[in-house]
Image 1 (cartoon, rainbow, N blue to C red):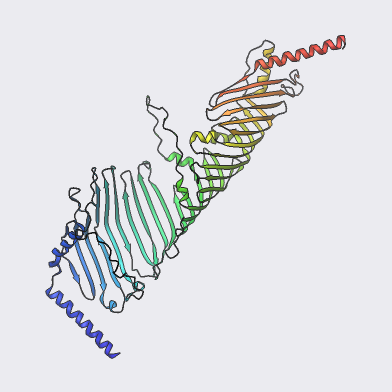
Image 2: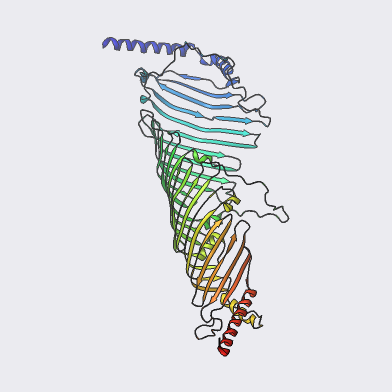
Length: 608
């Protein structure tokens, strides 16, 4: 043992004597020409080291360099491809003798990178090849080097006093595409770091894309295990501000906190304990990614608070309307199928809840959305919500495995107030009442026109205790009766027909929705109907037959019209349908009734 200590002391003495000799008689700056020549040989670019190189030998081996400049490609830009105002690194000497790597603070200050692409295609990276290296065939006889499993120095013993990047800038100027982006790393700081030990870090970053400016503040605790396979960031907080195009009235501010973990050994990534705020919307959740499989697997769980779409729409700048006289001709470009190939690149499972959604002055609650994407098939296993005083439940699938997508859906609305629902989703409000609607459908192709033509669907509906707006059927009947007597005057009355129940079924095929069995029941009327709605050409052709079952004037009123069936035609465009009385049919019906009455009288008078 004594001999070993003696040898160690002698070794240290030799090192100190060598260091002393270098300090006394060697100036490393004398080797700058050799350094720059070697760089030019390897990169084809001129390297300048403007500041003196400072070396330190004890108690740490260290170097400080400054004014380092690597020229850009000739004729591309006068700005250097790379510039560093100051670089500094230190390694403690004595721990090296024990197989320990203890690094002082690493400083990278005033870094600048300028990546330029000219309009003619020349770029900063042109000619970045080694001039001294020629293509060589690999020496098959040369022994293959393998990583040493008994390295004299384990990275588990690594210790870094800190890492500092400050005032770093990257500019990407692509003049061919007319784009310029700039990234400013104002500061990245990592406190004392060692594997298996928590280290504080912070990032201050700014990005300017030309159209938008992004400011990012990010901090937390970093821990990398001694096996260097598990990277964890805990208690992280992020503040992001986006301004510029699309955010002229107010910048977008996103605040969030979370824990993050990257498991390199098992190819897993996880984001947990996520809490964030976006546009005053509170969110929380977790995200898991398994990227080791041939097709990555992603699992998302997200809980969203109150979402006020009305307020968000009001905060956005209004879209410019087409100028008077401008060409508003519809596009003649052919419709194409959307590219859904990306759905086969990942498997996904998501569970999302939303506490409340406000839209168009209406409030919906308790949204639940469960989705699964597997092998190119997207399944909506649940979409449910409380809305319009009722409930919505939807399931659906989208199969993107073929060249043309296929879809299937099943939707149920229960106890929903139909008028605000139709107003919100269809901009129609001609029916009120409590509605139950069920529809199942399928189809292929997602081209806009094909969506309408290829839809095959069947459904049924029942609306109770409601009203039909836009037509007053009793009034039409009274006017029809008056017309038979030669009175063609019009009466003023509210265009509304009350009913106790409105039922029917419908189907969709070749872009036409057919309803063959409409039935509306009220104390005075029985209304049946059938017809078609062409959703491709937006035309309706519908006939309603109203039969009087009581006095139109109320209890004790005139019952002359009892049993009379009055046909009403609804025809025309969706935006402006024409509703009118079928006078010819009514007249024929009246004539037939009078004939029958006359026959009865003759029969009674003269006998059979």
